[in-house]
Length: 108
Image 1 (cartoon, rainbow, N blue to C red):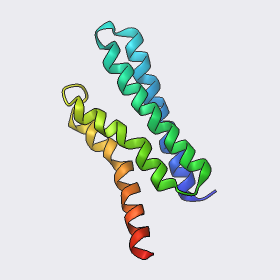
Image 2 (image 1 turned 45 degrees about the vertical axis):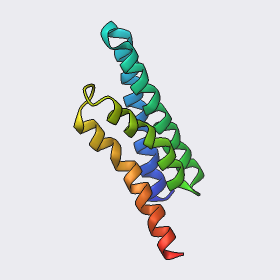
Image 3 (image 1 turned 90 degrees about the vertical axis):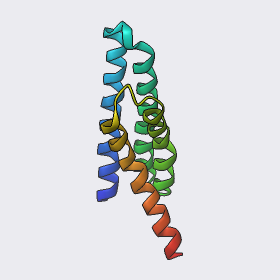
Image 4 (image 1 turned 30 degrees about the vertical axis):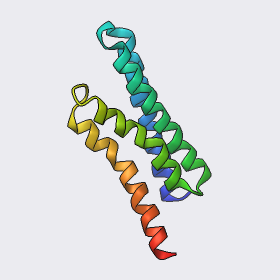
């Protein structure tokens, strides 16, 4: 197993735990149901993309980029919900994927 595969899987699991905590919040706090479910769904999409990228290995950067950008858009659309720290953290994986795709294009 490569280091990249292990890191993608680890981050995918972290995303899945975060999604689960969003869904849990929706169950225990009736004031935050729609926001928590929305955030949880976008995070779950990211988790699925990261775990898929870890399993496939090939085209990992494109899979990660497409799967994690929706969460970034969610945080941009709801700045009053989680705030800038979550937006910044959610940018890490798509930016790394974009850098990888750009580097691969420049080398070709």
